[in-house]
Each structure stands twice: as structure tokens, then as C-alpha cells.
Image (cartoon, rainbow, N blue to C red; front, side, top):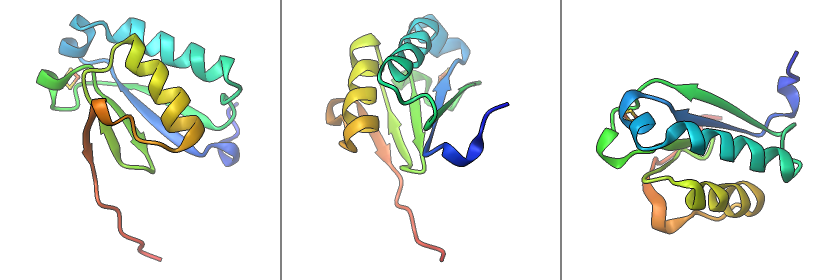
Length: 106
Ligand code: FES
């Protein structure tokens, strides 16, 4: 069973119909492979989702708690999302769709 206490980020990988037409299955496998290869498996949880309502921008990848939505994710972008965003905390600007403002409710 997955140890939730070690998870730092959760990726929602759109696997809705339109994103799938745009290659989501390959992208999802590529992201998961890269996460594993980079040793991030214990810290990153990924979930395939149904449509996220932005089909025209697909494939869509969403990262929480960063509240960052990525658009037009192909295998190249997927690699950058893992290596730049997940490993170094930097936004992949060329694929940024939206960054939600997050408030500290503490
Ligand atoms: S199928 Fe991915 S946003 Fe609609």
C-alpha cells in the first residue's frame, strides 16, 4: 500500500477523450517512467483523470499543491515538467496554462 506520508506532490494526468486523442496515454506513461527513473516515485503521486474541461488545451497535466495547470503537454514537455518543475521547482513557462492563487488558510 502507498505510504501517503512521503508524498509531496500530486499530479492529475488528464486521460479524458480529447486528451487521449492527443496522445495522453503515451504522455502518462512517459511521465511515470521519468518520475521513477529520477528517483521521485516515493514523493510524487499520479492519478489518471477524466476530462478536466480544457480539451482545446490538451493534453492537460495539473500539479498540486502548486495549483499549476499545464497545457499542450507532449513527451518533450512531460520530460521538462518532471525535470524542471518537480525536481527544481521551476515553472515550464512555455506550457503554463494557469497558476491558481493559493491562500494560506493556516
Ligand atoms: S479530455 Fe483532457 S481536458 Fe478534456
